[in-house]
Amino acid sequence: MIPWTFLVVTIVGALFTFNAYLPQRRTGPLIIPSFFAGWLTSELSAHHFAWQLLATLFFVWAGALDAWPGWLGLGITVASWGGLLALVPIARSAEPVMEAALAATLGPRYRDDFAGATEDETSSLPAPPRRPLNPFHFRHPQVKVVRDIPYLPQGGPRNRLDVYAPRGDVQRAPVLLQIHGGGWVIGNKREQALPLMTHMAARGWICVAANYRLSPKATFPDHLIDLKCAIRWIRAEIEAFGGDPDFIAATGGSAGGHLSSLVGLTANDPEYQPGFEQIDTSVRAVVPFYGVYDLSNHYGLQATRGIDSFVSRFVLKKSFEKEPECFRRASPMHRMHSDAPPFFVIHGSHDSLASVEEARHFAQALSQISKSTVAYAEIPGAQHAFEIFHSLRTSSVVQGVDRFLSWVHSGYLRGR
Image 1 (cartoon, rainbow, N blue to C red):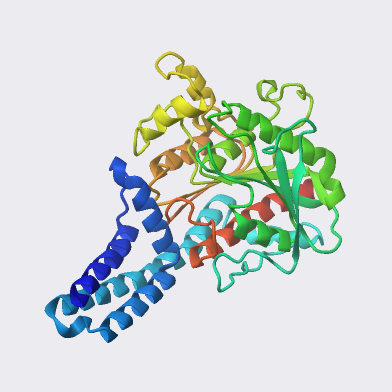
Image 2: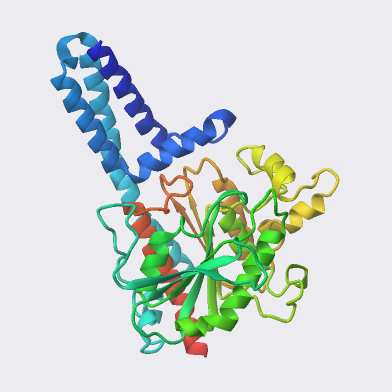
């Protein structure tokens, strides 16, 4: 019995490893489990190696090698270990990929721009981000967090935000607005981009993580209107936290990538600012992670048709056949214009939930239209939501985002 049980356990472990290399992207029922398995294995390969090693030692001690299924299981496990170890150089490749994307877009000597902008601390070349042993440890000794601040006087419990700020006094610090994902129906400001926000706050930035109303109770553009209200709050209140209300950048992943892109592309659009049409809701830069950019699927680049029906039923609550223009207006792909702010589009090559082909097309099309910088980095081996917790890949990507935002901020400081 023990040898057969060991064989089953090793097969399960090997399937996790195999899925990290070849996740399902077009087979509907397997997409969600494939995402979770690939996401955790790709980012936590050392942890998977550890549990497989402990399981192997236990089963060997219990007599798994007394029969041939146990020996077969041992062979499978050794092969799985080799696959897990090979994930490490793939994760390390995120660093040169990010650097190559920045150098190709900003110029090979873009780092020189950090040095001479001003003596402001945030204009220096970014140091590598902190990567604790525990991937889910997000507290930083140099960062303080003020939670659950209402950004709408008459708003509900979803209209609150958290502020991440450096300990000690700061003045005129750049501000980063983080917009969480969750398919427009779930998610919370405390759950996502914590490695990025803690790193940026430790570097001297003010980070604001905002909740917003969720579908199906909310109907688009409620989500976008709420985020513009959060920007209105930042303009009015962030100086009290040491932030610069004139420099706001936006970021977010998944649905947050979609919404942060719309924030950047619909600045000051009165349709999305009812009652506060005169407030400046523009942002200086946008960094969308693994976003959805075309709800209309005009170019047929989505990996699955599930997104279309989901958005139609729960988010827009409209029929594409009857009102296709509503889907296009809600899509960053169809809101591009020459005055867009600088963008850094980031997507994983192995994303099971949001189409990497769509992200590529969006970045390329925007770069041809926008007068501002548009960078694109496709992270090898990365799944959806890859940077939610600390990992080798997350560390490299966070540092690259820091460099991009610092470059944009340096240009702002020079022109101020």
